[in-house]
Amino acid sequence: MSGNDTREERGLVVVLTGHGKGKTTAALGIALRAAGYRMKVCIVGFIKGDACASGEREGIKRLAPDVELHLSGKGFCGMRGDRYPFEEHRAKAQEALRLARDKMLSGQFDVLVLDEITNAIQLGLVDLSQVLDLLDEKPPAVHIVLTGRDAPTDLIERADTVTEMREIKHAYRQGVGPRKGIDY
Image (cartoon, rainbow, N blue to C red; front, side, top):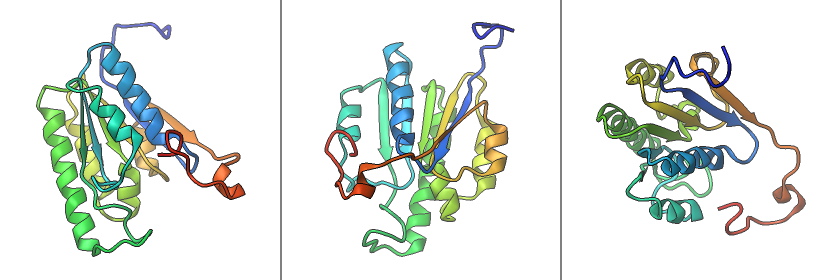
């Protein structure tokens, strides 16, 4: 079969993982590409909430109504001055998972991005079995993109495409702070 074979028009499962920069950015690139083809995209964030300012959020607003964004997290769980109890983080992540399932099954979206879902798994905010169950329910034509560090082996095995981002060098490690438009 050639790379252009269209006999099987099924939605793909894409995992973007690793400790390098660019997982969410790559997922947003997929969203941008899909929007360019007038496909409908839903992005559900599992860690960052509305309080986390980012150029990505503002840029996505410009893609409406083709791209819909839901930032469901309470912020960085257990770090960066986190002031919420674990139970609140888990409740928000469970709510995000229900929302993602509803959006996936609605028939309104071609692409579903689950941003930082593997981080949520590693933190115990959602269970791997819940994510695998979601993939089992995936309508045939829907593409799902999952991002975050340390993707579990079972998830990698289920995916059609897996990319691992590996840090080679980062300005932060050289004492350079995050830059607007590049890092956030």
